[in-house]
Length: 478
Image 1 (cartoon, rainbow, N blue to C red):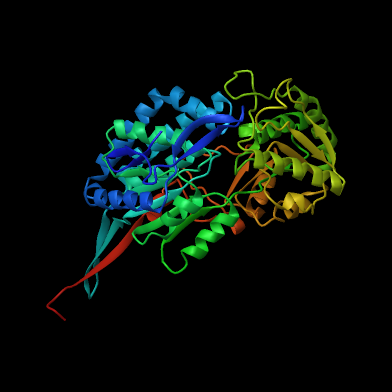
Image 2 (image 1 turned 90 degrees about the vertical axis):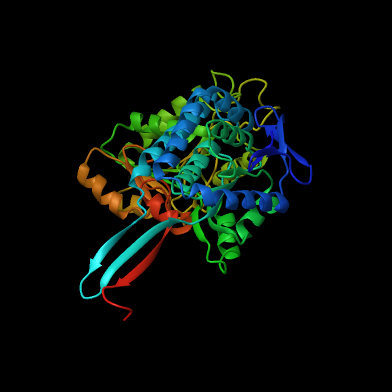
């Protein structure tokens, strides 16, 4: 597959290519160009040239371009999903859900085009008139991770483009092929050349030059807290706008007034989605003492039933982790929890899977300490740690005890409890009796170490535009 720069699908200037690994088999899934600084320069130049024309289009025309893209994405959802599963590892049904979710995001932004105003004017008593213009920023940059590449790409593409900006997008080198397919579909749907450019390559080779490029007015990044901090430091003197979503360590507080079996089933389904590689999946189950044992018992019953396999196989409930480093990291976290005194209960791999791919059987950790050093950090994989809490105050204290603050959930049948806990949880989004579902109509982002800025919802308008005030005196020059 090739990069998308201006009106061309092209190789990198260096001519070098990077092999993408199929995580279910440990063999190559394909190749992409190894982009670098020169490729980023060309992409920014193409985006800058396209910006002059794109920004002058009526908002409705830009909305139509996204709407047409959504339609063609829906038609080709199976093809894109297959590419995504092959390079990322998730089950095919989850991959297709993600692709269709991206189409829905484009449809949302297309429908929101009518809400984007070019500004407003007002009469100012004893002064004259004030005109406030709202204009796009210009060339924007986006860097996305490998866990949900199509959906997260759609968040950033839709917001940037519908507000009149052009975009240079760098996908993760671990899962870039489906994103390239997405760009190719948008080009065939009629998106003008240069409006969207996709450069593949390693973060040090392509991501860093994009972040530092003088002509790039905004960077939207989704990834690790360490990389996000590095981006903030690198851009501190440039005055670029930043949106940083830096992962989460979401608590799921389960109150004693809910059915422990239903709550455990929900916890398992949510935690195993995408093999646990979701920023907003519940990563710490904080369960009230009264139902703790029943909750754990249900998980011990259902975890052995989880079918692990190649995401292409319809029988697989979960696929492999995306990469070997991730698998090793999860296994190390499980061992460290056991060293801390937790009790570990593991699922099993099917015959033949242990010697291929990056498979990791689900693990239940019980007896976890509330102040576990392991659980202070985000664990990206199918680990379900359960922490016992005696009351709501303790549960909230545990939930807020990490440096992250992306999402959280409270599970209860009492509305007053839901309202109280939702107010006290330190998170950018709080769910009640659900977790992880995220319609594009609502703002999404974190607090504390999970970053700053918001995506989706109408907040995208302010995130991708800037205001200019023009004051007109009522009489004469003075």
